[in-house]
Amino acid sequence: MQPTDPVSTTDVRMRGFTQRAEVPAALAWIDAHTPCLAGEPVATEDATGRVLVQDLVAPIAVPEFDRAAMDGYALRGGETTGAGDYNPLEFAVVGQAFPGRPFEGAVPAGSAVRIMTGAPVPAGLDAVLPAEYAREEHGRVAVAQPVAPGQHVGRVGEDIARGSQALAAGRRLRAQDAGLVASLGLAQVQVLRQPRVRLLVTGNEVRAPGQAKGPHEIYDANSVTLRGLVARDGGLLESHLRLGDDPERIAQALAAPGADVVLVSGGSSVGAEDHAPRLLARLGELAIHGIAMRPSSPAGMGRIGAALVFLLPGNPVSCLCAYDFFAGRAIRRLGGRPDGWPYPRVQAVLARKIVSQVGRVDYVRVKLGADGVEPIALSGASVLSSTVRADGFVVVPAESEGHGAGSEVTVHLYECP
Ligand SMILES: Nc1nc2c(c(=O)[nH]1)N[C@H]1C(S)=C(S)[C@@H](COP(=O)(O)OP(=O)(O)OC[C@H]3O[C@@H](n4cnc5c(N)ncnc54)[C@H](O)[C@@H]3O)O[C@H]1N2
Ligand code: MOO
Image (cartoon, protein in one colour):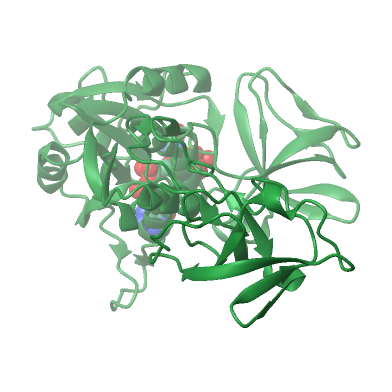
């Protein structure tokens, strides 16, 4: 603490946390401050993964014409009644139809049109006989099987009816959803803007991978973890700065406009160089600092103007955990995604007990073994490799003392989405 830097009521440096917020209170604060962002147009070809702003009403039918579903002969189904191997019926072939090149003429009774899959069915005809059941010779086709009216014909709007709701607002577009938008002829679609995320990495000791470092310095793991998680949650990296522990630089980077979410790695706790909480309180609002959980207990959050700021502890597991509990939820909500964790979940039986303190949420890294769920790390937030060895994690709620061996728990699997 510097003498020129008076300790405020929110300054926990070298004093410690007097109280910690409950995890549900932190989640409630996030939910109250994360309205969906505004919409923006995006090219349909880049729309996969984006979230639709409005219901998408089909401006055209797909298809816009009755189309052949088989290669064969278009005819009037009613005229094939009684056709069979021993009673082939003959039709005059008066022309042919291809996709995009319809047969335009009139088709007299007792006639057929050679037709390819996807071609418009000529006016007056109502069925397609597959080529397998026909023999064409000298301009006539012998029909060896009856076809009912409507058979092998895709009717107007069989895929999408004009004026129908093709996709609902809030839908996160899968590849085929974006394909469907394209099938409606739309080159652009209105989607939610992606949250712009600023990544501020503090710590005088932190060096970028690839740089030379001194013997007591460390390489920056948190940036890489956070960048991956932000991308997973649909955030757009607005900027990424390594700021050391210089309060002036940190303050400037916190206050600069342009971000929807600011992530601060490190400097969240009670050390003399942990500036971020005090700076956030000075520049905006430090809504929560200190959370009843392990790891990530020094995590915090607040806002500066419209930007939400998350203080993520420097210890790499803590940083990952605080991001996943809080910042990720905010980014997903702002971008219109479901707020829950994008990790698959499995129910499994504990091979060994997990002991947890009542009043604190525990984030327990686990392995899935032949004997069930093996807890591998409860503490040790500086040991990132514990999350690499783990298959996932179990969350023990604050009201629980843990779980006995043999009890069933929910495991969130660390997996690429
Ligand atoms: N007296 C107290 N001390 C501490 C408390 C407390 O409540 N009272 N909380 C502890 C807990 S829990 C954690 S977690 C840490 C968090 O501290 P900070 O957020 O201030 O983080 P730093 O001190 O900056 O760094 C902690 C640790 O992590 C390493 N680090 C930092 N940045 C990175 C990075 N980008 N990549 C990899 N590793 C990083 C840093 O070198 C430190 O080793 O505070 C405890 N102390
Ligand atoms: O929150 Mo700390 O992560 O327990 O080291």
